[in-house]
Length: 398
Ligand SMILES: Cc1ncc(COP(=O)(O)O)c(C=O)c1O
Image (tube, rainbow, N blue to C red):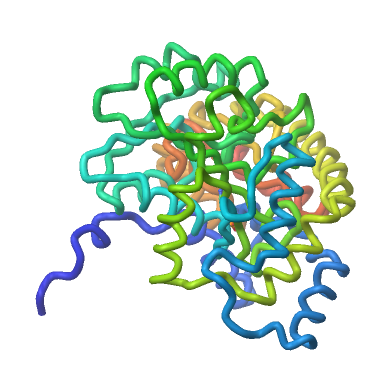
């Protein structure tokens, strides 16, 4: 047989999706597994949103829509961006996608020519580097560390720029670190981005999960809206992960190119999900109550993890993840005689010997850490902390 696509063969599958799938499979087989692996709120989609979806079916809204999505929804997105971010867009600049992940995919497809360098602050969401490579670009990582609250500085940014740099992918609040940039920090970065004439993909799916400080969209800063593809969605804000509905707001010429891609590929996301999303975007009560619940869960997790020896964790101001440093455990041995040499060994050990699924930091570009999602019930979090603590205490020096 002839060789399949090198481009596709050369990218890695999503490790977070793989771990979630494995945990779900083990659970289905009757194994006792606690999973904090997925970036998925545990609450159900709110009832008013479900009802809007059901009503769309009853109203027979079941045909093709425009590739950009239905006008009423694009108008609702414009109203949301004005209300929450003080950004003015026209419906022609809004494109509905099958989740925010698909919006990242489309955005990179319109930006990248072979050899273009795309800046990615690291730790990063697993998907960015793989999609950049898939589109023929080169990911260039800008390392941020715990001592700077996992945020990059203007100097870090400036150093990473070369004549080949085309764009930066900015994820604020950040998955996996929970870092949130202040308006002043963003201002300093945008001066470089505008001076160097870079595009910006701003992934804002955790916008509503900022517990300490305020959220500022980078697109709202001077000179940024015309160079930014703003990405958001309802997966996280309204617990709608399975509905697959995201969106982007972009300069009109970019929006036209993305529309062309959609018209030749998925055409548009589900019509039913689009009607449900109108209801979601117009009502933030659910998000506010979920955020309050997450705040309590974050406190619980931080409190528990800080009592465990060799684990280091600062309180992250946003998203619903904890990115804890575990490298002091490297070199130790598990009860079954396996040496823990890196974050993957440690997570494998926890899954196999303690029935706990969390994600190795390696997936996000930092092998010294592991990621916990705290978008889970209090009971699940308690069990997860018990298992984690036992797993850590059971590791012995060689
Ligand atoms: C930073 C980030 N962007 C995008 C997504 C994808 O969201 P969606 O379900 O809308 O595709 C995720 C999901 O984990 C994420 O963490």
